[in-house]
Amino acid sequence: MSDNKSKLLIIITILIFIFTFAGLSQAARVAVIGFESNGLNWTNNKDFERQVLESIALKYSSQLAAENIIEVVDSSRVSSVLKQMGYRTGEKIGLSNAVQAARMVESNLFILGSLESLKIVEKGELAIGPLSFSGIEAEAVLNARLVDTLTGNVISNYSASAKETDTGME
Image (cartoon, rainbow, N blue to C red):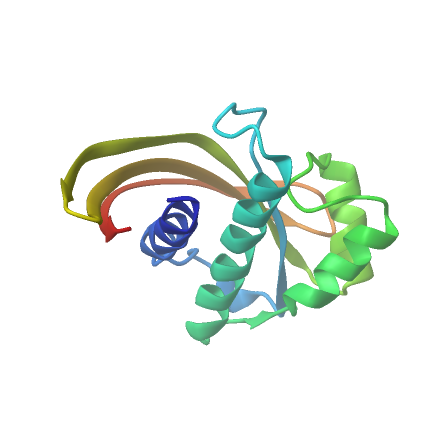
């Protein structure tokens, strides 16, 4: 069921971040620094948590690049810089360090976000012989800040939520 949860979270991420930031067309480059979980206790597996948060940042970056509004810094370059600075995906990064990372990748805007809440509920199970059918429902709330790299000022705050249900067979 863990694979279904991971796939469902990625689907939710795509649904949540279909919106685009107003005013991005005026900027030359934007970097998606990443998302953190704000200490939510939705999983005891820190590696899985980092994978989900990294997936959120990657999907966000890809969706933003697909909009062709602005040049988006490659996510592998951002990850490399964060690693040089001693951060791991999903760890809390302060605004001043995020500004430093954005400058290192030569972006004039950056996005820093957080997973504010995540509820995953397994919905019923039906077994027919050796087959088992079950479903999960996930609801997520994400916040994102668009920040000017030069000044460190937050230009805009965004919040989005989504609910998704998925069924599977085991």
